Each structure stands twice: as structure tokens, then as C-alpha cells.
Length: 316
Image (cartoon, rainbow, N blue to C red; front, side):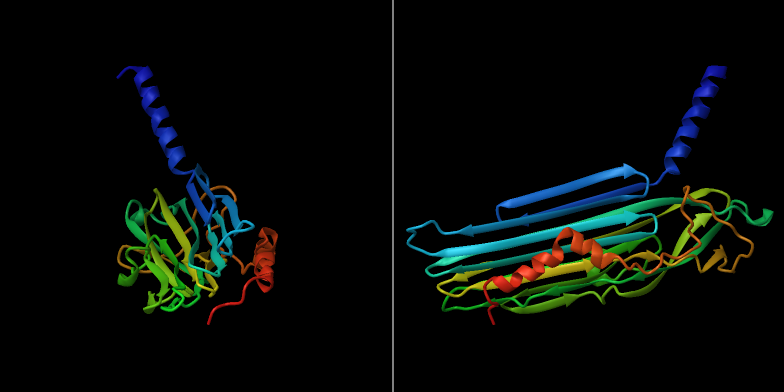
């Protein structure tokens, strides 16, 4: 083979190897508050990405209108992802009133993120070189949803409904059949005038995942999570509505370190080491964060909630 061709092949292989070892991170955010809609979507090499969006809309009937109506809509989405942790938050709320007829309202917020991280576990002895193994990792998850109960008044035609859910996926994670359309594990709550339906066993707790790899070769794992909150309905004939849904993965999917490395037969392996991207130590857990409240305050979420006191009272 021509020496130039050999050089080109080697350069291509080196480029592919470097690309496979740089990781990839994705963050998608979307908010809609009636007339105000915003979105953010980015996929980049590496393992670090963060963003936030807020939408608000305030509408009222013009002077002299035959029908007096008003509405306030809010939607917030936040996402932060790195090699060992994903944090997400979505919340939507609408408030409306009308003296005659009906007035439709609604809001939606969603956030989803994923990160793929390369790692290499060299073979601690010649017998394991090229064989498969598994890395046992505890994922520490906190997250849940809150959703106001839907209702319908056949006299005023006021109605509300909503859905809020959190879900997450990870390499080596088991799957809940109730969550297959959303994620491997989830908490999915929907509510309307017919009642409230809850799917999934919840997400909070410690989940042990078994991540496959080959001794002496680069492998990778992927973490992903999603939050979603949507509320809608009508105010009607003198009855106001106030409806909210929140999907909070405030500091979920925290990497819990590596509890064990196993060979192909499931036997513990001793003397192992692990490599990943510069600055990433996969052997250590992510500490419990103490700044999430400050992050939300910086987004104005707390201020948004405080403003509720000046809005229309909730319907029973």
C-alpha cells in the first residue's frame, strides 16, 4: 500500500478515536405561555451544557368590551448536564377569569438532556484483555411531579386538565413497562374531570445500573432525563381557573461512584483502574448539592411563585 494511503488511514482512525473519546451532550428546552413561546436546543461535543427559559403572557379585555376577561400564563424550563449529573425543572401555570362565555388558557414547559461519556478500564491482568465486563454504578435520583386536580363545571363550563411527568434513562437500567413511551423509569401524572391517573413507580431512590464494557477498549455510557408539565382549560361564566403543574428533577441522576467491576462471569475484579475525559473522576460520587435553591431563585422561579398571592383565588 502507498505510504500516503497508510498515513491517511492512520489519521482517519486517530480522528475517529478522538471523536469517540470526547463525549456528547444534548439539552432541549421549550416553554409556551399562551402568546409567548421560546425554545432552546443544542448538541455539542463534550459533557457540559446548561440553559434556562421563561415565558409569560398577561392578557385582558379591552375597554368597552362586552365580555370582561383576563389571564396570566407562566412557563419555566431549566436544564444543567455534565458527565455525572443531570438537573432539570419544568413548570407551567395559567390563571383566567371571564364574566360571560368561556375563555381558553394553557401553558407548557419541557426540558430534556442527555450525556454520553467515554471511559476505559485497562485489563488488570492478561487473562482479562479483550473480554467483557460490567461496571456497577449506583445512580442517586430525586425527583417528582405535582399537578393540580382537573375539574369540570357543567353550569359555568369552566374546565381544567393537565399532565406532568419525569423520566430518566441510563445504560444498564431496567425498564418499567408503564414508562415505555416516556423513559425506562418514570412518574407520570395526568388529571382531568374524569379523574387522576398515575403511571410508573416513581423515580426517587438509588438505582444500580450495570454498564457493559470490554477490558482494554474504550466504551461509553449514556444518561438522559426529561421533565414535562402541561396545563390547560377554560374559565367560564364568572368562574375563574387557576391550574399548575410542576416536574422537578432538581438534582437527579447523580453518579454514585463505582461500587464494583465484574468480569464476564459476574465475579468481582480487583486492581482495576479507569480512565475518562480530563477532569472527570468516575470513581467518586457527586456530592449532595446545596445550591439548587439559589439556582431557582436566580431564575426568578421563587419570585414567580410569590406573585401567586396577587392572582385570582384557586377554584375548588
